[in-house]
Image (tube, rainbow, N blue to C red):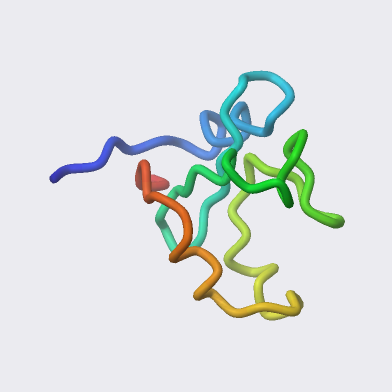
Length: 77
């Protein structure tokens, strides 16, 4: 299945504020994290949704396996 591609500007709108979607990108994939209570209102600790979190993950207390809980809904171009 081909996933839709989104620009960083389109991703930025899915921050839980401008639109109802709460999305984040990691290693080129875009995940819908709206189902997570940890992303309520588009904020997760000091991180905001609508961003590419690839470079932030090494500082997180969890590994990338956390993304396995969420559906990949697109690709970041």
